[in-house]
Image (spheres, rainbow, N blue to C red):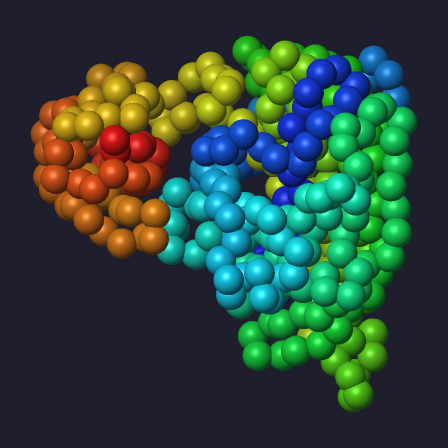
Length: 335
């Protein structure tokens, strides 16, 4: 339950200009790489001209944000949904996290979340984010409620949700990234029940920060803190996640490991892609997965040029093993 509910952080926005947020979407196909800081990150600074710094970290998996219109089935399950965000783990593409979003003349809201074997359906009261654009100082809060499902257990939840544009200033990540950003904070507190037998079977409290680049108008960094407590399920867990936009931004080799500094080109490509791996590394073997997690190509290649002419158009994930034994994943598009 810890790893499932940690993902509930993803309520997205894009910054239109400094100190104002225009929508909750990240740019389509943006990569976010998990960072593991050795000493945490002080994010207590709020208000105007704040400063936040993240250094001394390791790299984890990379995720890509994609957007589609809801299917008829999804629209029936999550009424009012206008957009579906899928967050695809490039190391395990078969089980994307999905977030169901509604935007209309009344504002923008979360209608549901589905990830693996857990589902939150805000069917009674959607999680209202706000009417965009939202300027610095805006704070929206209200009740949320609906149904949940987890590993065959079904029940209901109630709670509160808030979203505010509460800070702007300078964000520094590693030794090469330092940008002016505006921050959106999202909080939710939920209580779970399994009526008529179990009331208040567990709780979730969560704080999420989104840092939007004032120049590129995209989400550069997102952070989630989640605490889950359930005496009935013997759970008392706290989790954090730090995710950095590695599509728009590049950290130095001193900050990131091999996966982050390896480049694929051209990308998109039609017939072949070249893999540019620093530090005298070469491709020993590779696997190519489609966006459904199926292996479509597996070869041993002792060079850095890969033939993709037989692939259909679409998004793919390249799993690379180097001559030194390192294994990592990269994304590419076949035209």
